[in-house]
Structures are given as structure tokens and as C-alpha cells.
Length: 310
Image (cartoon, rainbow, N blue to C red; front, side, top):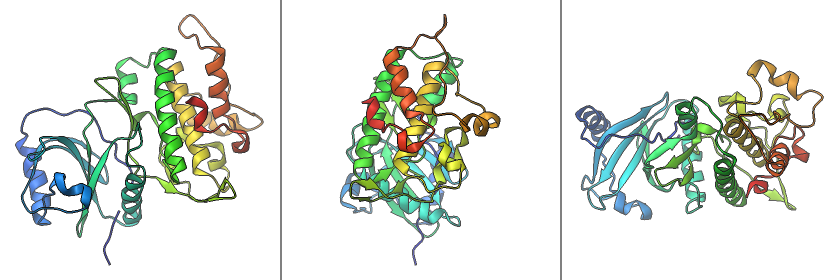
């Protein structure tokens, strides 16, 4: 039986436009052992031609379960990001879910374009458009976590909220919305990336069926929705709403709303996460405060959907 698989590794934006011999040897060694080099131009139909069309430029990033390479397709001259995932333990289901999620959300505005995949005995390679930019955590880090202007945060909120809304309409919950998984490119375009922890749902009589799968929340506890801490069934769309709220809070106030030690006590006896008052560094409009607090409702049944930011 074929293994397929993965937990998340973000598509980091940085690449050097020189040929890295180390990257090339690493990538070629792995793929040639599996007797495969994908032909990007044929991936849309799921076909893979024998000619080696991908030239690896550099290693973009490494994680526990995945390595990201920058590559260029010699046929189309298009730069791509190749996510190489190892088949380890239960991660086979995750890799299958990531592939399925990317196929279901293909063409959604604000989602990093996906070109295809190829699976082997020990690894699976996913190919994406390479984004020339930076993820929001790195952006905030560069700014020493100084808050972004509300105008900028509203733009991010609108695009990511719209992308998540369409993903939800297609039955896919991202489950790992966070600063690291949102990128802005050199032209100020916004992209949601990394569906490695995505889950799928069906609606019955207009309502999403709940699940006991809280996978994405455990990986990044500072974005964890309150219901995920209470051993309850959850709805992926509602946890996406909460995580989007935490992400936007961090962007507009330059900090997370609570520490991990404060998280449990803060949820008790509160209807919403409190927002800091305006001061000489941060001024947030009443309208945006209202929208943000509706995303940060402790009770998921009262929480606004991501559409409130569109």
C-alpha cells in the first residue's frame, strides 16, 4: 500500500539567485535515488515527463519533516518552491491531506498557487509558486514588533479573510492560520500558505459537522481557540476565525494578547479577549476593534466568521 503524507513546514520566501552546489547535490541525490525529476509543465494534468526540467537553485528552509527548495523549470522558466516531505509514522495521512487540500482550494485568490505533486516510497514532493517576499512573522521581527498601520492590517485581513471564506465554502479548514503562514510579496500581494494541517468537513442542513481533530491548534498553542483546550468537539471554520483574530491582534498591537501561562485563566469568565486601549503608539478605529473582538469571542457559537473581515 502506498504511503502518502506531513505536518507543516512553511514556504519561506528567501532565495538566492545563484546555483547552490550543495542544494543541487542534496536534491538530486534524493530524487535520483527515487528515479524521478518532475516536469512542472505537465503537472497540471498529473503527467510527469522523463526529461529533467527542474533546476534547483537553493535550499529555502528545513524542518523536522520537510525541506523547501527553490527551483526553476527549464521549460517554462518559472521559479517554483519544491516541498519535499518524508513519510514518517502518522505523517502519511497529513501529506495526503495537504495534497487534497491544495487541490480543493486551487485558484482561490490569496492562496499560494499549487502545481502538483509526486509520491515515492519514502518521500513526496509538492510544487508551488515561489513567492518573492516575506512571511508576516519575519516582517514583524524586522520591525522589532512595532504595530503595523491599521490600513495595512485591514488589507491583510480582507485578503486572508476572503481566502479562508472560499476555502471554507469548498469544505476545507486551514487549521494553522498564523503569522508564519501568511506572506506578502514585493508587490504587496498577500498569500495564505501551508495547508499541511488542513482538515475537511461537510455541512448538514447548513451547519458544519463538528470534529474531535484539533491537530493544527496543538502545533501553535498561542493561536489555539478556547474550545480546543476543553476536550470538546470543534469546528475548523471557527478555529480558523479565532486564529485569524489572534494573527490580526499581533499585527495591529505588536504583541500577542496573552502569554501561554495566562491563556487558560484569561478564557475563564470572559466573553471576549480584551483589546488594549489606544495610546500614543497605537490608535485603532472603533469599527476595526468591533470586528476583531467578534473574531475573539470565547464562545465559538457567538464568534464571527472570517467573512467579517472581508
